Structures are given as C-alpha cells and as structure tokens.
Amino acid sequence: MAADTSGRTFSEYLSHHLQNLVYGPLPAGHERKFPARGETTTEKEIYCEEKNVSFDGESYCTETLAEDGWYLAHNKTDLEAMGFWGIHIDTMFFSITLGAIFLFIFARAARKFSMEKPTKLQCFIEMMIDFIDNTVKGTFKAAKNTLIAPMALTIFVWVLLMNLMDLVPVDLIPYPAELLGVPYLKVVPTTDINLTASLALSVFGLYLFFSIKSKGFIGFIKSITLHPFGPWMLPANLFVELVDMLAKPLSLALRLYGNLYAGEMIFLLIAGMVSWQLTLSGVMVGVLGTLLSLAWAIFHILIVVLQAFIFMMLTTVYMNMAHEKFEQH
Image (cartoon, rainbow, N blue to C red; front, side, top):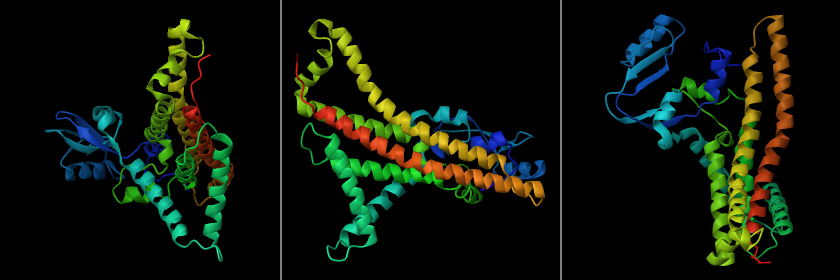
C-alpha cells in the first residue's frame, strides 16, 4: 500500500509506524507533546484549542500535567517517564487475539474430528502435529515428558501467526485505525522486543525449573560450578556456565525480534518511498513499488516460517539440555 498521505515526511512516516501504542502513568509536571491534526497551521491550532492545550506554532500540541495520571505515549520522553509500567496495548491485543484464533481453530478441529471423513482442516492440523511430534522425538531424548510436544506445537503455531502479520500491507490496519482516533498501531507483535523477551524468559524459566527438577537442587548447583574445568576451577566454571545460561534467552529474544523488525523495516522503506500519482512517472513508481513489495513478501514468507521453526526447535533443545542428568567426571 502506498505511503501515508497525512502530510508526514518520510522520517516521520517511519517513526510513526515503528512506535507502539503505549499506555502508562505520567507524573504531575510532565510536559506532554503530541501531533496536532490538520492540514494548515490554523486547523492545527483549532485542534489544540479543542483539546484545551497549547499550540507550539508548528505541528504539536503541548500541555503540562497538573496531576498524576495514565496517558498514551506520543514520544520518547513520554516512554521514558512511563518506564516499566508502560503497557504496549497493540502488542497485547494482537498477540492475545492471534492466540485465541489458534485455540479456536484447533478446538474446532478437535470437536469435528472424524476417522471416516476427515475435513481438510483436520488433515492440515494432523500434518502439523505429526511434523512437530517427529521433530520433538528426534531432538528431545534425555527423558520422557509429555509436556514438551504440546509446548513446541503451541510455540510454533503462535509465533508463526504473529510473524504472518508482517505480510499484512503496512498501512492496511494502522491508517484506518488512525482515522478512528488510534494514534499509533504496530500490528506485528514479534517486532516488539518486549514480547520476544517475555517469550524467551518464559522458556528460560521452564529451563531452570526442569533443570532443578531433573538434577535436584544440589545437582544443579554442581552442574554450574564443577563443569567444564573441574572442581579446582570453580570461579571459571561458574562464569562460563552463567554466560552460557544467560545467552539462551538473550539469543532467543534478539534473533526473533531482529529478523522480524528488519523485515518490517524493509516493507516500510518500500511503502514510504512509493506514492501513487495520476502521472506517468507516478504510475510507474507505484507499479515498481508494488512489485518490490510483492517480491519481498514472497521471500519473507520463508523468514516468517523459518523463525517460528527455529524458536520452537531451540526451545526443544533447551528442554532436552534441562532434562539431562549431571555426571561429574
């Protein structure tokens, strides 16, 4: 889809699409600054007056908060003031909605399960389950745990659905949402480091839980203090093992976030540089941009599926490592 036509510069267009819809607490005395709507300076000034705030004379409305309260963030200053308590509404909405769609589809297929006349949906889901089951069987061999395969299936499908949102045209949802009063909207949850980090930390928590459960607390302590250099190199052992342990959630989070963020950025660059105009050059540029977006979307399908598979595969590998018994040499 063509670039936004609300009068933004190319840089403003990119920053607008890369900002989450964040709702959080702001203290009294904080100066809020948000874009004034309108084509002309007069229209923007009227818009600020209707909001009972000041107009900076250019493009923004400003106000100084008289008391503490919860507000939408409009810039980096607001985000820094909100800190940890800022809620990424768009990330939560799309991730929960896609998770609910995943549960609905699988529950529907389960209710209509038939051995005699399986539906196309049932066949597709059975193929997916067999694929995940065979993958887990080939990777998870340290112990027997019936939780691992369902967890791997959930991670793969949920992350895949969130990644697939990257194939939605960049202005298809945010632009109508802005017309309805939603100032910012990121539709790809996995382009938010907060979500990928929370997924990675959840996996890391399970890794620690199963490590302690399978090895015992004493065995777990021994595994990070006596390995790999033996008891006489305890400080070095502890340093190496802690670095290795902390690298697991860090690599999981950054790999998924980085690949999807880069893919979204390329879509935005293509859309931001292309605008449809009723001239020969405008039409040619528009057609070229559409072809570029289509070509990148086709290639990006591989990245979308591959990153979901890698996240699921590494989770299974980490669960296998957690279930391995510690053997002191």
